[in-house]
Length: 444
Length: 175
View 1 (cartoon, one colour):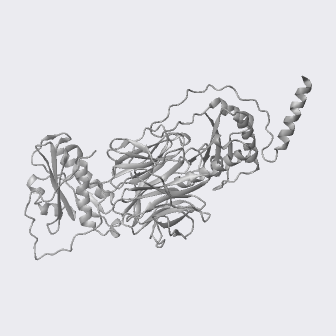
View 2 (cartoon, each protein chain N blue to C red):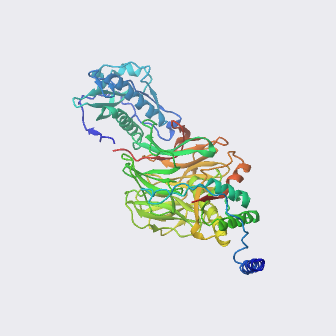
View 3 (cartoon, one colour):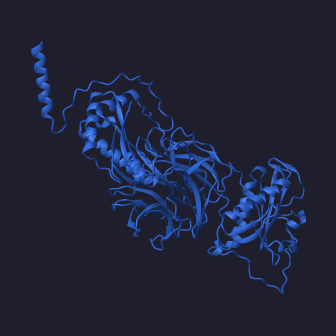
């Protein structure tokens, strides 16, 4: 679907502004943990252009403004920055993209400056240059260049925001990613539920299923090109694998047998899922391209919501084998099952962080909340406080958790993301209600 | 003629009484109104199977003759209480009197649970109802089980009264 981004290692070399040796300000960085209280002011004026010319996605000058707006929006959504601009900031000439007039920016209150340019190429594509400067010292902190199809300018903007976020926070990139979720419309008694896909900031939204049959539980393959999900096609919930670009899909396990809660293994070769038979739900794993399922759990009760550790060696899941929903970890072959949740309440829908160091979950007490814990079950931290928050999914950098929040009474469900360090949950814009979000890996 | 009929009824009574411990007496419920059966569905190319089709007139007849097509459950429960067993026994009689149709036993949960757990819970409820119908003599081959989890509530409120209505298993008549 997307043409591969061409990463330009070193573009239009320009001399970094020499730092004044007599002044050595402390290195510019944002404190990820403390950043929520003190977001860094960062100037994001419209990117310059060497020649204002038309492209398939509009004039390069207006693209410069649009790219800056997406960069600013991304940075704000992290909670670590207070972007200034592009609205309200003066533009600058093309030569200043690589050597900004710092005295002017020092008066803006910004500690950092994002500059750059959008240039049309003869082949119809565009080059987007992205630079990050420490305003106080005038030092260049990062530079990136991207060659993309003009219509894919948003991806260049997300890559630019990722470069800035990564340089200043020390955390991994995550803006250039996508989200699949269940788009919900209609009254509570007759909800239409279909799979939708969008960029992580809500743009480029489209539906992948028609809505004639209920569709649930979408999850990305590790390469981001396929999804597994649960469909009621044939009036029974079953797992399907769908190719995002072509829309081609196939039934994972043949026959009229109820399967659901599918997840790809980190290497993409296997799919773990729940199979319900005779009042008992167990976890099975099957080769992603077919073959006989192998049984992983055999305890009476509901074993569901599996999630692989990022190295693929273990699986966390929930089971009510003890009488209530609790979290368990087992080896990927089903051996060594042991309970890890022992706090008050019930624990459900676990998701293993892509970093491996945490497991997000739904805790059911008086209300439903999203929390995180160590893979051993320790260091439980509750992150949200909705009436019914459930279904956590990790950002590719393991710093944010997306989930859905259902309102009491109306049943309205909305997607939110929250930092693992706490703070306010941020609402994701969707054209209609949403549930069951799944965050993609970082795009290539 | 009359004598023969009397003997026949007596034999039927003996036969029915003889197997009463395993399968209860089957009331002679006449078959329901003739259903305008939809044309046979084609095999779906993706799933390789034929989707069961609802039969609204037969469904209405089941409700009229068995009293209800639905049984209810407690929170996180899948056990059948006395009234649920009576309803299912009446449904079994209707199903035995209408051998041309099948039933999809569809389990549901209230909204106060996580989505995937509720799918498992709904299947457990559907299976409880199915097992009871089989005990009543309905051939297992005529029964399917499905879970809708919390995806299809009948009551819209977020309160115990609505949740109690939504924790259910529905016998859906299909062809």
